[in-house]
Length: 384
Image 1: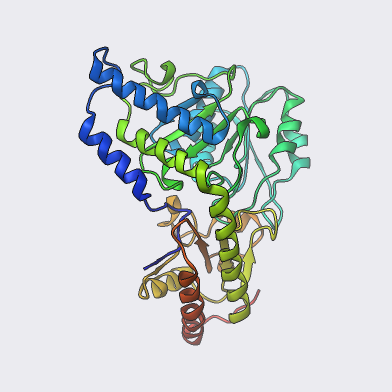
Image 2: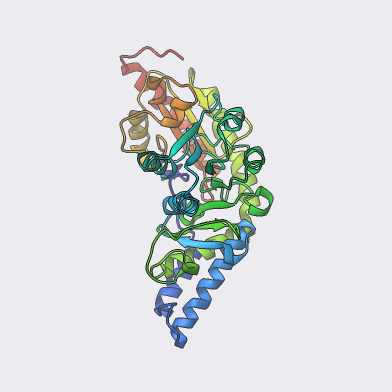
């Protein structure tokens, strides 16, 4: 099997699995209980919080555990806007993850004004547009750190500088950047930041939201006193322990992984460009997560390519895992100016820790033949 869909989810690291297995066997207490078996679980959760905080350059008191990256995005946006009820404007970009875009549409139905920053053909947001629409009435700006489909890295420093003139907090969805780029909240200067466990070889069902001390935030889930009184409900203890272990491992090896995987990704990208004619690369040539590769194959349907590769046990995707079942063309690819018929031909390959040279060689051996076969039977004449 050749797995090249690490942006959708990463395999569970064996060390993480071992840590979670130990925890599940040895510890069942409720961390809110005052007796010893509960307090021990509380100590282990605190250790995991410190590990996640260390991985993003935060203090443990600024990290709130959630059920997913999607929940963290919702929490950041709705939590800030409800804490600033007098401000009725929200700004985001046209190429955000559905977790942010669908929240923005929800806000529009609630009467908020939402501005969607347009992007250029590489996926970079229009800073002049941001400068023109931001105002004293803006409650929050939310722009992702790196795009999940094309990998483009946004100019967060400039976004924060513009927002700072109006005292507007900035949230960034760093789910696809975490583990691939340096993610340090102090250096970035953001007020809120979203990360997710299963993108860094940890378990699914657990995410985290960084909240800078002093940032206004209303509780998102009401009930108990968990997560500093901001997110009620008994904690997903095993998931949090796994997330902490994944974050600890990430700190140890992310730079080594990054260097190796970027070289591997360049080998894959250049090989595909050399072996297959008339393909369109999507994303910024330099300002992007290099392990995310997105190509369109004009005249073909991405689903046909995906299924043909799957018969060879090569697994890729057509875009965001959260919108994979949609028949519509990718909103990201449409936003960067691709025609719908070309956008629907795009395939994303994303490399991860457990990929090897052999994986890349297999793809380069198999992919050209699949494209040739599909083009031979396609009724469409490709036009770029």
